[in-house]
Image (cartoon, rainbow, N blue to C red; front, side, top):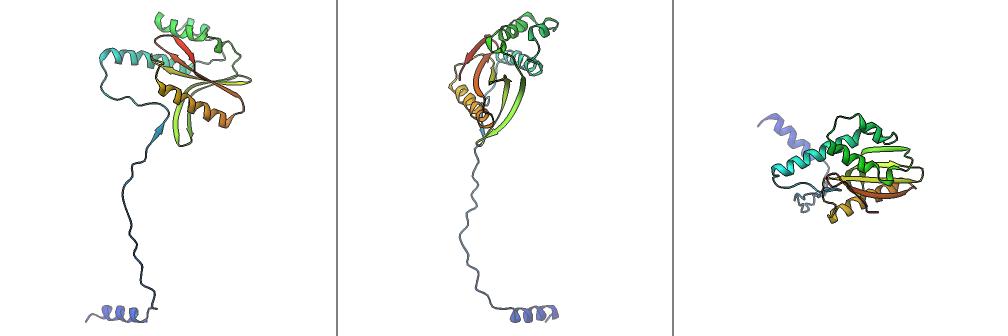
Length: 181
């Protein structure tokens, strides 16, 4: 016999006796964790008209991401090289009463994680006494999902601020602003 084997046997004999291991049943099932997001995901293939509308919506969204709302947005747009349609939609938005309030600060594309959900708030306008949520939609403002989404945003902001929180949807194509909260 191999000397290593004999040495190992001797060590085992001298090892203190212990209770045998109790084997419990273990389940290794994979459970898919649901990811909660504030906004809905797009599904399916899109036709050319929808793609053009989405491109237009993305362009308007990108412009709104970089504007400083403490400045006069109308003056900023006068020199911009945009189509009349785009300028018209943006000017219509900026003439809404929420933009007449003195804005202390604007937060663009503000990410949040709250109560297991995550998302990005398009725009938060901060005034002396209020936080105003503005969520841009391409066209339809009728989806019940949007109320849930803005409700999450509102709950999140109320959890981190003592200011009053209001929430609006803005249809980029229709030029329609709707107060939700």
